[in-house]
Amino acid sequence: MNRHDATKQFHSGGDRFAELLEESRPVELPTPDTETPMVSRSVRLPLDTYERVRAAADARGIGVTTLMRQWIEAGLADLDDSATVSLADVRRAIASLAHPSAA
Image 1 (cartoon, rainbow, N blue to C red):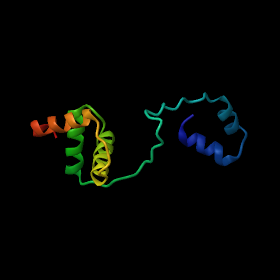
Image 2 (image 1 turned 90 degrees about the vertical axis):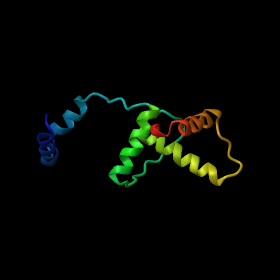
Image 3 (image 1 turned 45 degrees about the vertical axis):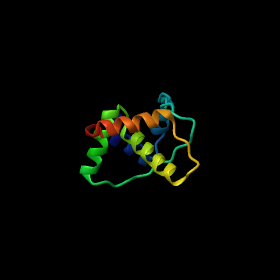
């Protein structure tokens, strides 16, 4: 059944829609990649800025949102003098300075 037909069934108030729901298979949702609860926020960026971020993420082999989260966390760490930085992050930072075209 397509979306239009399902909508008609729903609005008609008939029992057929309830039967369709009972016949449906359960859907497995993707497993979150972290135990930490996440909050989704929308950020408006100019297209050229987004494309630069996407290229930087691609060069690192990670997703855009992962890279943005890393940058936000790094910026917040700069505000807190007691924050610790992982050795892997330090190495990535040094490597990006050595190869500025990858950023």
